[in-house]
Image (cartoon, rainbow, N blue to C red):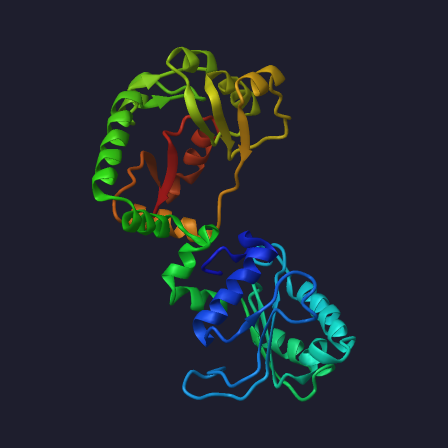
Length: 338
């Protein structure tokens, strides 16, 4: 698993990130290029650098190339064939370099490929083989997504320059460092007060009011119409798998409100275009985020900050627990104990 969401940067921001990393680690003398007219190089350095070892200098010239692969770290992705295809096209461009400044890539002694893909030893061998066809006298280095993450671990300021990379924990630290303490305290108090007076529960199942209030709700609404009557909501986060319930709750959105959907079924989501235009409503689809957020959630659970309501059954009563879940009678999860 990769530690930072490099795929979210896109090729342009990823290239800028890598160039910033190189200048931070190797010095300001590294020349940067960008875009598609860089003549086969994204960064270049003529003189010696502390690379690949920080303990001794290696004579240049050095050629750095950045290759970003879309969704390289998505579940089930196989990005390396796409990376090698892009590399093959790039090395072909290097061969076409003419004379003068354009020919400098052919003079490099060290070729360094940097990518958001996670690279195995076998992948590094494949990269070296491809580069060796064009630059037989150059030493090839391949730094993958985990190597970029190692550099980011050493530079919190650089991480904060690219907010797409930040986790919830990073954002907390960032806010604490840049926001006045008095403002934070007043904002926290306001949020706490708002929660005290406006906790609303919208049940989509046959829950009893007492059970709902035991969960901390101050106000209970049964549908979008009653949510609107209670004052409406600026944001509705829907985890339901019922499209019908999602459509109904839109009635409870205030102007400029947002419906964030994290559940789905096979039915299409139909909404009033008049509501969409006149109330300036936005509908946003959201996935469950990456594994790193699951680790944060589990950390909150381990700290005792998440309270659960479950029914427990010994393993021998697994059929009974399963049947209660099928009938929608479990409150609220059925857990088997051993």
